[in-house]
Structures are given as structure tokens and as C-alpha cells.
Length: 133
Image 1 (cartoon, rainbow, N blue to C red):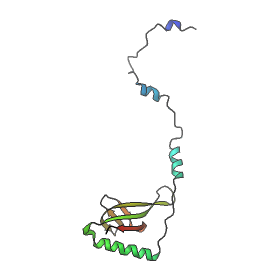
Image 2: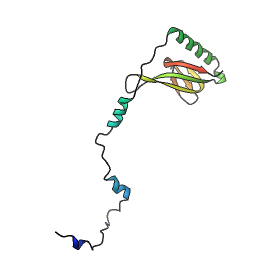
Image 3: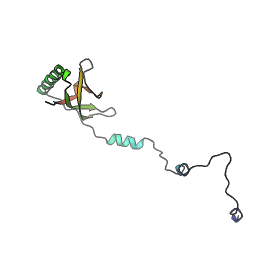
Image 4: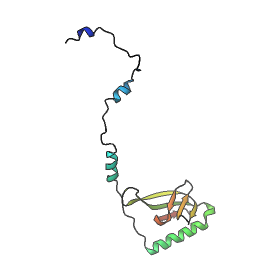
């Protein structure tokens, strides 16, 4: 079968369907991800976590004293730096985080420090608190 007789015919333009952009046409030939979420699962598994280090009684006492001092000086809006442990939501372990900001209040009922930017730090996971003198 020879197609030479079709070479001189004009290109057909559909009246029903609008012309596709080059980007839309190229998308038809883009690679297909058959294993949706597979790479995210691999990254999640590869993410390192660590165990929370338990503080000794002396360190716990020091932190409690620091919290009492901070609570008594809340009206001065102290600037603090806190290192705390954040348990991982998806796997065993967690990681230590560092945050800083102005302390708004200490919520004893929910056992949290609340900073001016809305960050809530669980009292039970605080490893260290620094205050600016």
C-alpha cells in the first residue's frame, strides 16, 4: 500500500476537539510511575531516628528550677533556646530538635511550653533550655 497520494492532502483539523498544546502532547509520553508512593516509602525507611536519652535526677531538678524561674519572669517575655526530643510519627524513635523564640506561657495542664510563634514543646521531652541573660 502506497501513501504517496496522501502527502499532498491538507492536515486534518478537528472541529470537535481543541488542538493540544505541545506540553499536553508531551505529557502523553512521560514515564508512568507504576509504584506510586514507593520512593516515599523508601525515603521514610531510610530516615534515621534515635532513642530519647533519659535525663538523670540532677538534670531533671535543674530543668524544673529553670522552668520555675522562667514562669516567674513570664511578664518579661524571655527569649529562650530549647533542645527537645520529638518522637517520630511513623516509626520507632525520633529526633532532637532545636527551637528558639519568646516564651509566652507554660501550660502545666497540657505540660507544654508555648512560644510566640505557636510552637508547643512538650515539657516531658525537653533536654535543655538556654535563656538570654
